Length: 159
Image (cartoon, rainbow, N blue to C red; front, top):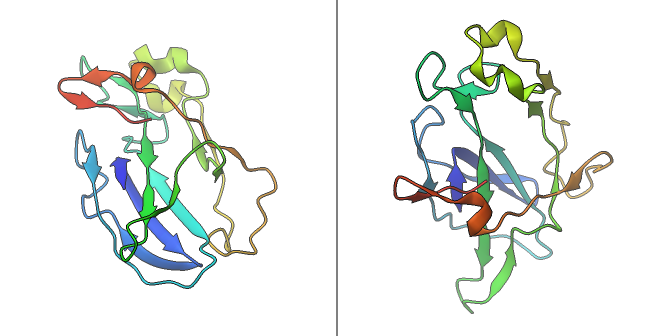
């Protein structure tokens, strides 16, 4: 798993791992290896979060680095015995954005983003990690090339 900023991993409805780096860690582009035992077929769920200071969706508020928070995650699931890849994150994965902010990106320059930035937040469905969960309203994941994501200060940004 590679995450900006934080994740929880669920397999067949059971939480099997969590990012060891707190979500509040600045410039957290970390990787984790999670080992788990599960029966096939595997239903894999990820809860991923990017750090923002508040509902505005902005990070580094009040500094010359004030910007829209962008997060991302990459996962590879491999069978430890055969070393074969079982799956990797790609555009066929289904996603549900629970928090969208800012809805008006022009607020990035605001001196009062908690007032000026608009957001939308919904609650995660109670059974989202279960194999029989409804994915009505979910969309396919977005995939970005290394060129689109870019490299910043020696870190490849994953979104």
